[in-house]
Structures are given as C-alpha cells and as structure tokens.
Length: 444
Image (cartoon, rainbow, N blue to C red; front, top):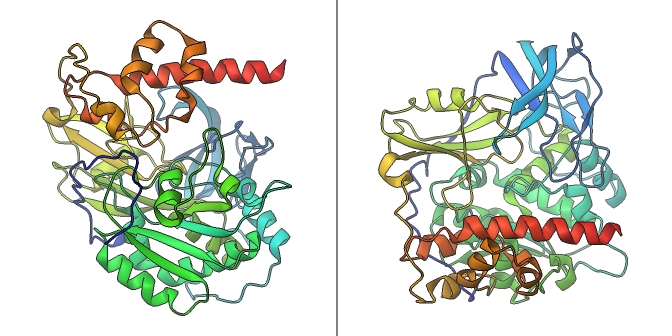
C-alpha cells in the first residue's frame, strides 16, 4: 500500500507525453533576456551596464532583499540593453539583454561532468555558496534556498524531505532529471543534510515513475539515512505540506512553516542545482524544462539557459498548431497562461504546455448546487464555495477568519466543480487583497 495525504485531492488525467524522453541540451540562443526578478522577493539590482562584456556564469545582478537571489549571465556576450520585458504574469519587469557571441564560462566554474562525492565545505560555507549561486526553489515557488536552510533560532530540523513527486499533469522535467542525474542528486542530498545538521532524508516519488523509484532506491542504498518513499498518485501531492503529511504524518499548522514540524523540503531539481553550486562552483544559469501538449509533434525535456525565449522552445518541439488554444508556463493546474510566447525562461519555469482549443475553453458558470465537492477535494480543508462569494463582496475580515491565506492555489476546487464556477479566480483575488491588508498591518 502506497502512502499519500488524506485530506482532499483529485486525480486529473496524467498526460505525461514526454515521459521517457531524455534531457536534451537546448542550443545557446543568440539573445537572452535575463529577468532581475526570478525569486520570491524584491528584484535583484543590476551590476552591469549597456556595453559590458560578460561570461557564462558571471554575476550580473545582486539580490539584496531578504528573499532575493543573485542573477548570473547564462551566455557569453555583450549587454545590449537593460529594459522592461513582459514576464509570465503579463507585467513588465526589468531584464538584462545579452547578445551571445560564444560560450566561454566564468573562470572558477568546473564544467566537467565527473561525479564529485567529497563535500569539503562546512555547513555555514555551504549556505553561503548556495546564496552566492542564486539557488531558489525550482519546483515553482522560487523561495531562496539559503533562507530555507537558515533554520530560525528556537526551531530544529529533524530531517530533510526531497520532492520528486511532480504531480502536475504533463510535466516530466523532474522525472527526467532523476533518471539522468541520480548520483549528483544523492550528493546534493548529503550536502543539504550537512547544511541542516540532520542525519535522515526522505525522497517522495509517485508510483507512476517506477523507473525513477527503482533507480533512486539503488543509489540511496549507498548512503546512510536516505530512504525513497513510493507514493500513491494523487494531486496535489507535490505541495510541500501534502508531501510532508504523506511521508511523515506530521501536519504543518495553519499559517506555519514546515520547519515548525521539524522538516525542511526541497524540490529534486533544487537539490541538483545545489550539487552543481557546491561541488562545481556553478551558479543557477540553466534548468530542465518540459515542452509538451497533445498537438506538440516532439514533446521534450530540454536543458535550457535562463533567458531563452519560450517561442524558441515551442519551435524546437514542433511549433504551434492551428488549434492551439492556450500557452501555459507550468502545468495545467497551477501554471500561468501566457499572453505572448516571446517571454524568457526563468528559474521557476518547469514546463511549457500547449493546450488545444477544446482543452483551454471554459464552460459557462452556473449557480452553485451545494454539492460540497469543492470542500471534499480541498487539501487545506477550506470551503471554496464560501470563499468565492466573500471575495466577490470584498468581505476581507471574514475571508481572513476563514483562513483564505492557507489556500495553496492548487485549483482542485475549480477542477471538480460541476457548475464550472471560477472558484480559484476569486479565491486568488481575495487572497491577494487579504495579503495586502496583513502586510500593511505588520508595518504599523
């Protein structure tokens, strides 16, 4: 019997069309647009100017805020301009444009592919190296990893959780990475264990990836205190709180953090990036991106330099078909619909999904029939049928008391609603407004 979380969840069609496809290196683009905001906090501050020559891996912007991260050049070339470009949210953000002329890596980066198991840095040095390298959560949250590793005074981590679940339909980037780099991921786990001062690590992988489970179990057997947990397939098991519950039985309290129950969790892609940063001195300048969809001729998992135009990835996978209804950055449940394809890949880009017209269209919303399905599937125990009208009426105090900030925006409520009500849209809007009120209150 496989483990899973027990509160809510749905079972959307998996559609893992690119499963089994190897990670292909995507060609270095002629021009990259490297956004200065690729993390949860304030934008990084550019330290290069127009006309500057830069090498691959060179620091080009410093993350100076608490939740910011450093940004490095993903190509070798010349800075052509620094100006705003549309990002996945549809807003204009500042980006450094670099015209690539070669691929000469910055001096101290080790570009060989030999597995390096010897961890020479101590805990403080590891956290500092991860900070310098601009490592953020690659599961989509883009939370700076050095902040997550700095356990607050009075708290204690008991063990490390590694998220290899990839429960979003269509996406296979993490699956492909586990099959290609299991040795590096295991060393990355040892690095994070050392940084946290823990002796145990638990890797969660859903049962629809039996090859990854078998391979990771084989490599984990070489290490002490590392265990692989095959999990029942269920969305949104890749959510941090759901994965912790599934593996440990511990429940992160409302408004709390995983470390409140003695756990620190990292996505498997982040673990690999940590390995490269600490063992190879390589900053985060590229990542694996799934490009997929039922009308894509060649669904693929590409290793892509940050700043690469999404349009280039789509073209390489076979191009846009006439009946493409929507382009999504991420998966169909939590991803963001793109207004245009000329948007750069960022650290949080796990996939590009092209939906057909019939998949992208929404049915006309009908009155709520009080079936309660949205409540039954909510993994956070919320009442979406209630939160939607409260948001429509701007009843923010009531929304806060109904714990709207606990919503993880997984979309299970909208997915299951038989009346096609846009529950998540209004919950997001209400959550955004309540969040502003809470932040304003804290400043007073």
